[in-house]
Length: 103
Ligand SMILES: [Zn+2]
Ligand SMILES: [Zn+2]
Image (tube, rainbow, N blue to C red; front, side, top):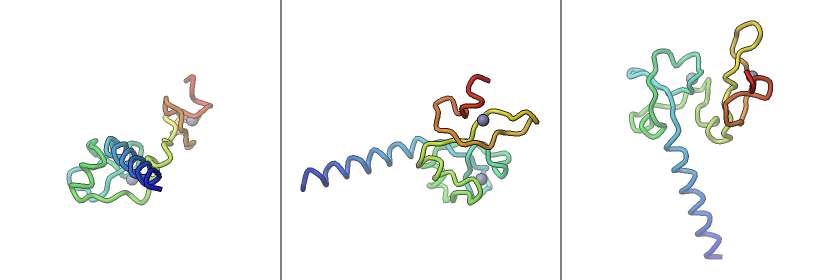
């Protein structure tokens, strides 16, 4: 039983470390932090999730940065034929969905 508890603690610590390295975007005056592609991030600067939290900023309710980090998916960086950003979410390393992988 003790072993199990130890393993659980290690897992939680690893997850916390991982989250602290995540980059979010927030402007100096903004109260919220965003993902890179959020429409509301505006003139945001990039910072770590930890720094944003320390500065008292809260997760944007539109782009939900933390849910991105949790499932490790990002919005595809590719563009669709009409020039708008692809809306597909992807967990692939290149940050592009299967359709835009080679683009
Ligand atoms: Zn946002
Ligand atoms: Zn795509």
